[in-house]
Image 1 (cartoon, rainbow, N blue to C red):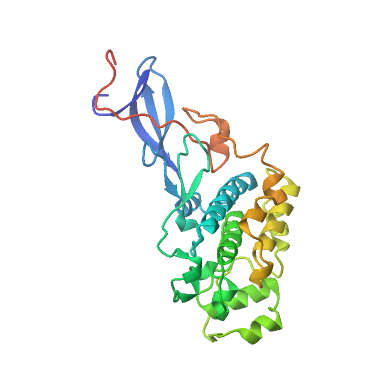
Image 2 (cartoon, rainbow, N blue to C red):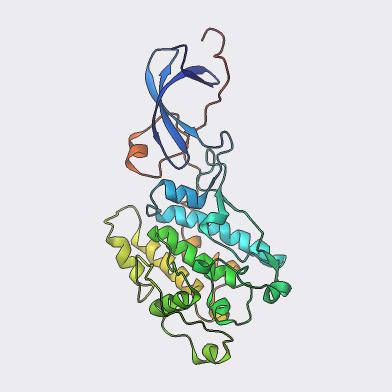
Length: 314
């Protein structure tokens, strides 16, 4: 086995025989354990040893599989805390989406996240001076921007609501190719906006040559619960799903004045009722388990080091 790649843990040396598969956080190798000759499977994390990956890439590597509710809650609570801190500055992030969320330190804290790429962020008092398309990516763009109305820090909460639904469904809620379609999609789900908003709107673009891009066409956010149960999953509690949908409904309101603030959302039952049982780092493993092969999101492991030589005697 002189031509094989060597991996070393503090007390063991392994020879990588072949790569068995690849996933969101790295790849799994068939390896030969030097001390006793056993064949073992070892997961090697990407970006070893930091363990960082963009959330959107993580979803793509898992074929945009539905994310379990407990992981959605873990991500949601952390991002709400981040938005509270930004509000104190006061800074509006203005581009919240899976591509701008990074999973970090996964070997110690599963689904620990950070917001990255502050290129579109702005101070609150300068927000309404920003020009499109520099206010939110289209799929996460709030009604105020679509209608040309004055914006506030609540634009981040609208994007956040779309983001949560995307984690839940595995697909974007409003994947519009034009602002007209974006507005139409919102109307399909939320109904028409109030006459007041339409009367003060400064823009409304029409598009006649448009294509339907949605996988799920909702007439109400309450239908999310029905879509979830079509997956026949038994992993999540019904009350958790209902609480998550209720929080999303409070984020996705036509009128920004009615939209929930991040500090208030932290006290919502979806977050506060489950802090005692979720968001704990999982126990680390060094080889594949039955659970790991059963669920597409797996569990993190300590990444082995990659020295040129084995320990003395190896």
